[in-house]
Image (cartoon, rainbow, N blue to C red; front, side, top):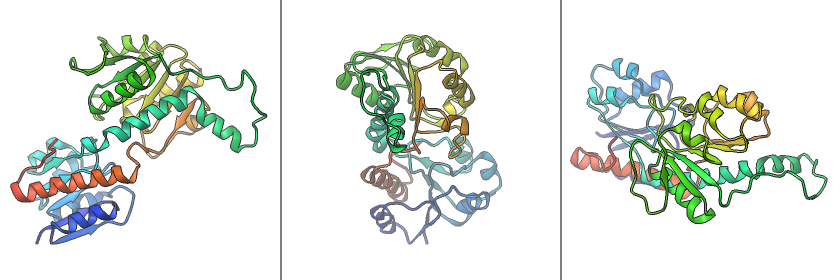
Length: 318
């Protein structure tokens, strides 16, 4: 009997699609990440697991299970830095993700954060809710006009390119980027040699790299110090790409114009120092939070399950 464990509640059509494939589908009702005991039970009690962000399948978890029953971790989401893929491979477990389904929704949130930070939207909304708005006047809450400015994209993958397109075609912005390799793009963009160099040239720095050891604290005190005083930083990637303490210091000292964050270094913990600042916009990881997008992500994960059951391979291996 083929058993699938879905580790968080998912949209009803996704669960129905999974139930059509497997003899037994167990949907875990909790919304918090798997516990240490549950992580190990996922590998011993199920043939297939559909995990997601926060389910920390570390090397230690795989090491604790000598002969795992699980053969596939069909991750719900494009990011998979919560899974030690090397340890999974050694255990004979395939890992897949859902890359294409998240691109546009995440890019939309990236541009929204650029606008919210530059135009002080969250600060203004708080002002109105606090009944502290005294009415319009010519110098009230002056922010940064986004059209025609320079944007620097950190990581020109699917999401980075989608953000860059919106910036170029929608706002007439000049696009710069840093990436491991030159990209063939359908819009004008300049590849810059180093992240620090680019940070000093642009009005917006938008982070769109994968999480993991290679990118941890990529945005550090040096990069923040290189940014222009009016520039804004936006992160829709993974929280630990930014050195949060360094960012807090830069915002407290007004060394940069502001920041827009959808992810955090120790999520869901958001430091009080960040929450106390008016020059940072804080969202609760809304990148893909639209019903049709989450449904598409779920169907892509289930498609990986289907392909694995039929062929032993997946459409989106990592």
